[in-house]
Length: 228
Ligand SMILES: O=C(O)COP(=O)(O)O
Ligand SMILES: [Mg+2]
Image (tube, rainbow, N blue to C red):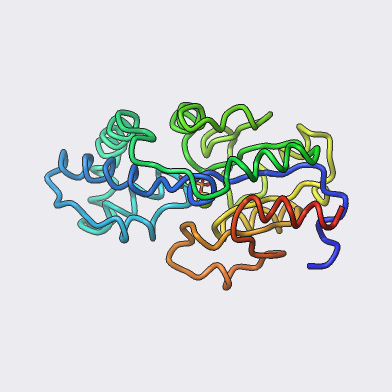
């Protein structure tokens, strides 16, 4: 990875699985939705395999455990409505910051980097959650999964941040926990660092193509500093 972070001026940070352990919130909201549809609760570990590509994908995957494709489509609108209600009623209550997130963001900022948050979480969930956890003040730009026409792994949200900052992609590092972040970064031409503790569809982060694996956001800040 020697030198790939040289000249980096900004960082795009993922939310679920990178800054916040949100799986307990997903678990409560999904099972609240399932109860309304007379479906049995499912374990957090199963939900973790389905999170990462936004709410629509999550709901279709969860309903697909019980119904065929036609059944899923028939129930989709009611399920999404219930899921959104349940999620918003507990948003952040069961989520925790990963170690050294605040310290890492503060270090990145202190090093002069501009910060954006790009998540596949709906923006209506994202904005209050960042505020509740004391993260909102770090970011100049925040895009949710429904803020733009396409979400990660499409490069559009990352390209949009680069344009917002007036920086070439090579100077904007993406930091995330999943293949969605890495693929979006590769397609956008951004360097990418991954964290090993989040949700990567049940796959080891070592199987995901990135420029380096960092134990925490603070380690990411140190690595970027060491190359600049
Ligand atoms: O909500 C999701 O599907 C994943 O969100 P993330 O992009 O913040 O990991
Ligand atoms: Mg993530």
